[in-house]
Length: 154
Image 1 (cartoon, rainbow, N blue to C red):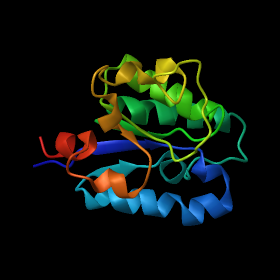
Image 2: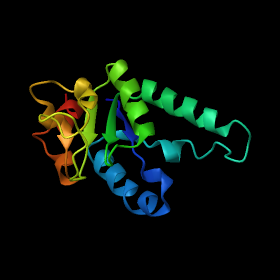
Image 3: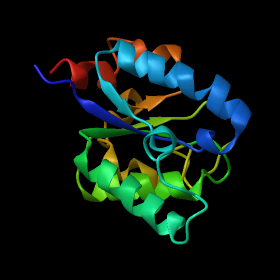
Image 4: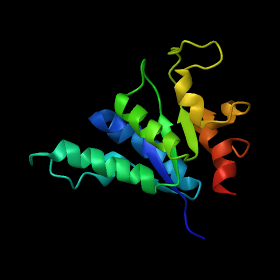
């Protein structure tokens, strides 16, 4: 059986502290579920940032990874969440990839009473069961009652 590939969209690679302390925990938990995790900062480290045109190469490589992955797990903290994560998430939703959201930020960032974030982020989730695709703690990621665990084991 081939491992499912999760594209981990997050802004955590921009900060040394976040990259060293937060990203490894997410990667470890997701890999612990039996998946291969594609973390874009790690995957695109081979792109020479000193070379002209590096930004476009990074963007294209990230989009290709979203296309080739089996699902997206997007960390959507912030008010608003990181714009790069939003583009990756929008691409995954347009490609009809399974979508899972993580937010442990207590601030609301919404115009809706039903959702804690902009309602468009929930267009990739089922309308009646979206809470099972929305994670508010790292421990929930391994919860067998939540959607990611069920999807991996389907």
